[in-house]
Length: 259
Image (cartoon, rainbow, N blue to C red):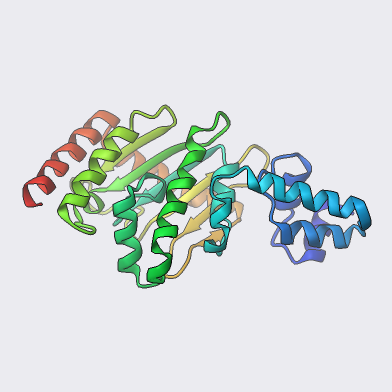
């Protein structure tokens, strides 16, 4: 069977997941996905048990594995397998760059995360950030609109701490943080946030669009290319890295005064 035939028989949206596994780029396979592949390939007995055991071993290497039940979508896998992540945020600090207090305030405000799960939700977000420290982890470029820096999420004290954390993360060799000032006015991404996940060629990229309940993930080349152009536009409108840090620092000082 071709990868396309396998994807069609399993009801997967494209052959990308199959080809990524075949090229040893499927770092954190889901047990359910492996099981349906084994069913399709008619793998039984000791070989099946061995492969499922390897699946659990592979997933156990990830820091976020113990929080897998909190994710309804493939976000952790995409972050782990991407070579580059480009994200634009209009009202919030990107998840990979959030402090625990900020992340908890976002979860509480959403009213979607049950109160008893907030602590684990925050822990899972901190665990996800470990991908940035891996030798083969992704490069992260985050363009953050100024309103997201000024919005007092949780409190002004929490925001001041969050912004100082951003300044610290900007020193990470895989992280670029750019601020999009209000003076830029209307821009191509003004309608909302999105994230681009780039994978090793020739795999197509994936666009993630956040919603109130959960994110949407779109694997379509034309759709991805459109959003890549939009990202390039807002990146060009943003301040340079040093000017971005200067703006973030000045806004953090304003939050300090109001704390």
